[in-house]
Amino acid sequence: MRKLIYIDSSYSLRQIRDQSLDQVLKLRSLDGFFQAVWSAHPLDTNPSSHPGIAACGPTVTTKIGPNHYFISGRYGRFKRLTWLPVFNASLALLLFILKLVKVALTERIRVVRSGDPLLCGLIGLIVSRLSGAALVVRVNGNHDWVRATTGKPLSARLFHNARVEIWVEKLVLSHANRVILYCENHKQFAISKGAKPGCITVIRHGNLIEPLHFIKPSLRIPPADLHIRNKLRQRRWMVHVGRLEKVKHAMDCYDVLFELARLGSNVGLILVGDGSLRGTISSRADSDGLDERILFTGNVDQVYLASLLPYCTLALSPITGRALAEVAFAALPVVAYDLDWQSELIETDITGILVPALDIKAMVEGAARFLADSALCTKLGESLRVRALNMLDPQTQTLNEIEVYSNLGVLQ
Image (tube, rainbow, N blue to C red; front, side):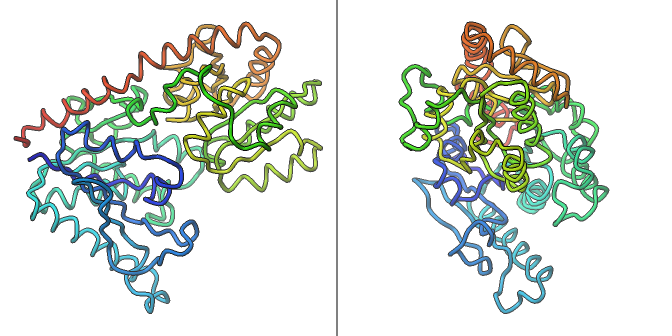
């Protein structure tokens, strides 16, 4: 019986349920290739985003489907030790790791998958070494670029400085049996951190996408939210899907709106997602008199997102991962920075408009082109959908991933 431990901290169990991200969990069995899966999140009870769920306590195992279990780590083991947060968190993490090791040994699990080469990768490395399982690690971005952009580690609260974080990446990737990337652009980063070139495979986002996004845009119904539907009728809207954080250059999208308004355009901006920049963007919109032209949806479920996108005019993508694929499947014309994987999908005047990284003026000009030419919007949006369907075909990505696991030589 093929079994898998899948360690990932991208989404908590509550987020998966609240945002209808069931595909994230369904994917892990790879259409039944693995007959049993243990999903594991080392910090599944964030006290700021999970009110009502105790941040401290024992590791919790929840059965979420036939032969699929979700193991939730805590921010601390004992409530009475909250005055010793580092010790308490370390104790909770140690017990979480021991739980995974016990599952791996008891269930004779031969493969451990980690969703990143940092905390999840380090946990995966420990579990794989103690259980004798093979380790597969996913690289979810060019972390060197992120650190250079923000001036701090990706997991500052955990690793405190970039040198420690880079050391962890090198330790994990140099010991991984296989490394999975979602784009060609990340290969050099992975190799620089010790990944063996022959052990690297590119598997794109396609099979992570909620099936609703594959429905033809013309067949999707408008959002159920009447407020949004009324707003959509008032003007044309640009949309950005992603975290409102510095690393995502979310503020650049507001700058595009500001410049277009200054040039006389009546366009608006919908920001789908949340983050630390929301207050800053809102304040700027108020002071600039653009508060009626900006909509914050916050984090929404996939039904909402799939229904909203086709009713926007264009998308702005400073740097987005899976969200760019979701926008592409909605046949929206996209103006994107030449960053990360975006040039692999966006080609100027063929599938969108690709502009130099961080060139806000060029992004404004690209958006203005689309706003002035509805035929261009339709043509490039449809071409983008076709390219995305071919490049990100879910079945192909699933078969590629099955091949990775099969070639490990540890599964019967």
